[in-house]
Amino acid sequence: MEASTMELLPPPTILFNVSSAPSVICEDMNAYLWNTRRDLTTCPFVMAVFASLYSSIILLGIIGNSCVIMAIARIKSLQTVPNMFIFSLSCSDILVCFISATITPIAAFKKDWIFGQFLCSFAPFVAGGSLCFSTFTLAAISVDRFLLILFPTRKAFSHTQALFIILVTFLLASGFSLPMLFMQKLKPVTHYCGRFCFEDWGEMIGIRRIYGTLLLTVQFIIPVRFH
Image 1 (cartoon, rainbow, N blue to C red):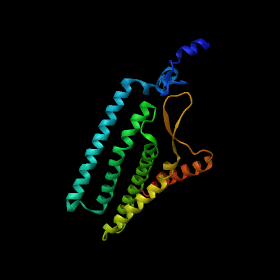
Image 2 (cartoon, helix red, strand yellow; image 1 turned 30 degrees about the vertical axis):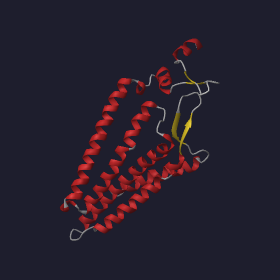
Image 3 (cartoon, rainbow, N blue to C red; image 1 turned 90 degrees about the vertical axis):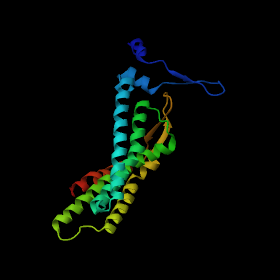
Image 4 (cartoon, rainbow, N blue to C red; image 1 turned 120 degrees about the horizontal axis):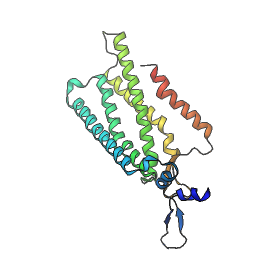
């Protein structure tokens, strides 16, 4: 039984240091996942399919949101309060397309994090901040529509108030995502080649649970009340 199990494991990748003195033996994560779990994300065909899908989504996201931004910025009649919120959403989406949506498929298929410590912390911060910002902005749009229906003879929000709401929303979203800047760690994993980016709260498991509950509340439970 042990012999048959060993046959499933891929040969380890051997890395040597610059001086060719003691060698460090490690195993490629993709090879390990394929041989032990038949993980389809390690197959070149699956990688190519998802790379095409991600590329299409990123390209359409950048082009579509850029068109929205240019249209609102150039055409005076489109610069309404609801469109101010949509303008801010488009800016947030473009940032996600350039950073999170680009890095995610590469990290998912390569398994080894190649983007360094800064992006290990910054990319999740952008992803979480954008999600919070989008949720809060959609809630603000819902409140604006509700007030317009309730008081049809006057504006719900002025342009100045809308700009203030967008700024506060941005600050709140950044604040809720701030822990990601400090809790995302880039570390090696024993027996596997490369370094891996993951969330590490150490002994602060209780704080992690509180943080997760807080995010669930502000991203889902509270905004649902406004829709």
